[in-house]
Amino acid sequence: MRPADTVMNFSSCGDCPIRERAVCARCEPDELDVLEKIKYYRSYEAGQTVVWAGDRMDFVASVVSGIACLSQTMEDGRTQMVGLLLPSDFVGRPGRAIAAYEVTATTDLVMCCFRKKPFEDLVESTPAISRRLLEMTLDELDAAREWMLLLGRKTAREKISSLFAIIGQRSTPFSGEGMRTTLEFDLPLTREAMGDYLGLTIETVSRQITALKKSGVIELDGKRHVRIPDFQRLLAEAGDDSDGGMPS
Amino acid sequence: MRPADTVMNFSSCGDCPIRERAVCARCEPDELDVLEKIKYYRSYEAGQTVVWAGDRMDFVASVVSGIACLSQTMEDGRTQMVGLLLPSDFVGRPGRAIAAYEVTATTDLVMCCFRKKPFEDLVESTPAISRRLLEMTLDELDAAREWMLLLGRKTAREKISSLFAIIGQRSTPFSGEGMRTTLEFDLPLTREAMGDYLGLTIETVSRQITALKKSGVIELDGKRHVRIPDFQRLLAEAGDDSDGGMPS
DNA sequence: CGAGCGCTTGACATAGGTCAACTACTGTGG
DNA sequence: CCACAGTAGTTGACCTATGTCAAGCGCTCG
Image (cartoon, rainbow over all chains, first blue to last red; front, side, top):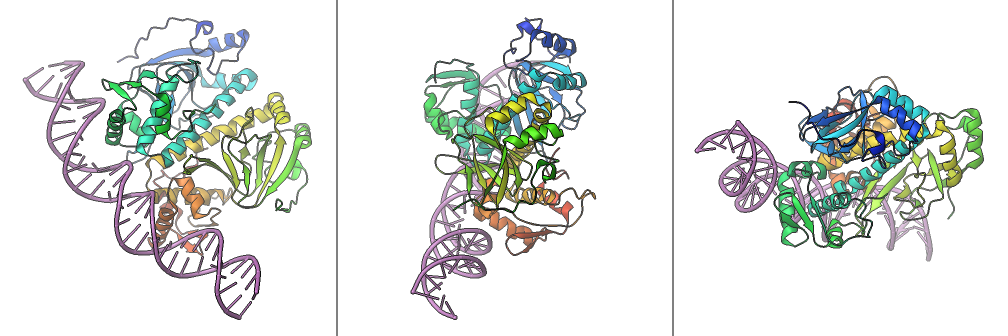
């Protein structure tokens, strides 16, 4: 089975949908020209594995569209997601040849890949890239630490609420109009992926979603479509001090 | 009460004990000269708070000696440690004015501080610093993700074993001689700090330590001194695939 | 139609949390 | 030197949130 032939209705970095937020966001036109030369696109179908932990990884990449998961697995099969990669997020570590985590496509996925060696050289020579990379890495570190609080100290109900708050906020991109009170989105994750992300079993995920529905915090339309009638209420359930858990 | 007057038996960057690993590790002598001008030392006693979450923070710093903890607290008081800062680790985020986490001195602590604005300018103008900072941030991100697996999926016994494995390895600095089978160190953390780090209560920490002692995985001398007769056995108890949980 | 997958629900088990008592130190003041 | 109080840690009894195991539903695909 071949990678999905995702429609790509753009051709050059200038029209790229993640131009403003990806690792190349700060590049000047001449720097983009250099990037163009070493970049190529790859598509994956939902469910496919992009890289296995321990594999040699000869590229780094930006997520262009779709969602990818970064996860870690213990010998006995317990797994923990350690990152949820949305469009513009960066995959791979410059300077490391072997992938530390498994990367899987959760939905159909398009990535903009750069061959590793040339990209590493560019990081060294192009401050616009290395600065942006540092900034993005610091953001990821903050997100990871936020997640540590969730994993270590929150209850199952708070965990689910937090996840919905994050997905809700990120899937209503820059609707700057303050915090809209009502919100609607499709869950891009299976119950199992949610469990792996939250450190819960699939059954607990299911039960807590049902419970949140019963108390009116969320409304479901089918299994995947979620409506949040009162976003502040959701944040309260998440145990968050009103910022939805995404420090910037 | 004033900060502890810790003995500092070095005076310039050239003799600094963390010269090889800190954010300044890659600097040339002339670059160090610039750093010298904006640096100053601060000491804290065990237990003191270095910065409160939400406070304005006008410096960034390297830990020179002692141990600091980074932690996050929810409104109702639940707290989670999100970082254990050992000598050479970096504190603060360039580009951010407000501290996102609380920083406390767990032992007596000496930090090499840089005023924030001049340091940020240096990061922009000195590739040796920005590169090292990126590298250190990526390492921290890896450590945070390793910790997410621990918090989300490990049992209490595995958590304690993992913590001991990490402290054990880091406190036997570069004894390159492979993995010595036996190992000995002092715990720099109270039971409470361990609980906050591992997402456990103090009682569970205590019980699991007792249990590990009973099964002969560890030996105690007083409350704080730990001896590991068989390090491989400890790693096995930690559920780690033999690397002690510190990817580099 | 049957198989398989994603999800839900129930009954039950248990790891870890909670509450409370107790020990062992350590420092303070009389 | 002796209370004394305060801090750090341990242990026990009990409780509950979450995991485990098992059954079943409602899709979609072949």
